[in-house]
Image (cartoon, rainbow, N blue to C red):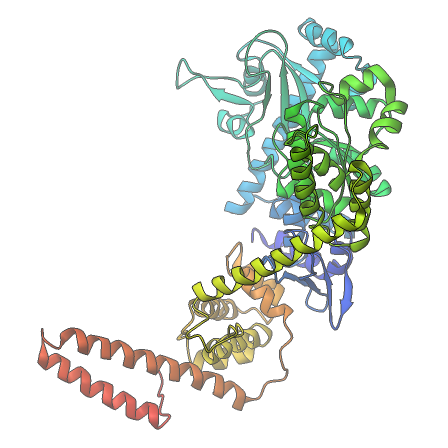
Length: 614
């Protein structure tokens, strides 16, 4: 994995970092047996399936399959490259990581480092142009009109990209030596539409707002056009550093306040965030000109308990707020929705009314998730006539029926009863009938699904079989699990069975393990994970390491596992030959007869438990 010194540093990081402490900063963990469990940060779940095994320094989610060591965790949670994750953890324990570029992985790390430098330098140049040159005059006037102070401009490193088509390009290539391919990968330049051999600056005549990752490093830009033209807003293209669905604008500044208050305010626009920050409201973030994603929602939930969605007060803004609130609710975030007057965005409201009123009237007056949904539901009905009110009440009670807590359901039913002057008992009775119909329908749907999945062989069979591995798969699974933990067992299996596993996954893992031990490595599951690299099999390894298996194992048990596998291979060989006999029956009767004789001999061996070797 690069030169010898870098590999030594990686080993130090792996052995000296406490995976429980690191993951505990992101996930609330509770001990159960030898492992610790919590809600997975990588997918939505209500029942903890995310496991950390401290003695093996491994994590694994039994829900989504993510797994690995502490380096892999940091890579996934912070969207780091391998080298960045190693350096981040090394800095926490005082280990020095040498710079190296001796192989493909390291050259990629070096390229990413160069792109980061280009992004930082571009941000500095744009910022300088805005504050200190004539080029930035239009941007300074625009920001003054929006009441953005110079202190805020400096805090957010706001800049300006002049209209010249190759201003940044010439600066970075001629004066700073950056290559065209690097600038293309950074999203700072684009191919010219006039000539395929020429390139121009991606951002021209725009107010430039840097976008940062969780560590405060510039990874992209948002550009707002000053003057006529389209598009009005333009973001950097997605790259190795920047994926819209993963990043939230201003998170690196807001994180400390968000975690302290256990709450975040989610805006749609960059300038909404900037105005709120300027007014002293610091737990504010925004999406990157796109809808809130499930990744965003999980990211928010890892850092706060409550999310206040504060989008524009127009129809489009409230539609987006409804979608965002549903996503946040699905990941167990406590959701509130701040209601702005129609046609007003947060920036406008803050400018007109100030931070105190915004806090007191808008944020403090936010609707709960279900209150907001019930209000939105009203727009589908004419509440002035009796039919419209009754249809609304029916659907409103259906919606309230989704609420899991009885006390919360009663709260909303009471509000509904008071608002529409309907007896509470009537609404409760209606809810009971709706829930009864739903349960009956769910039962029928479940039975239909089970039938379609082949669980019902006949009408006498009432329950689907419990999912479980067959005897051969279990034998192969246990062999691999023991091979991961014991080099001697791996060498014994290689001698007795070789790579003749019947299941593709375990055959591949066996081949990896044989190669790993042949290189002189000792049994070290975490090191083996690194040896495999970014393999799709990593999650299988982490699951095998997380599960508890009986230890120590006897040679008799190992021999039984091998016998099960050999028996299966013998059965498969018989079936293949019989299929060939059927195919050749009329085409080549002589060859079919020979194969039939071989089948009979194999069946005798199977009957006598004579599985031989392969």
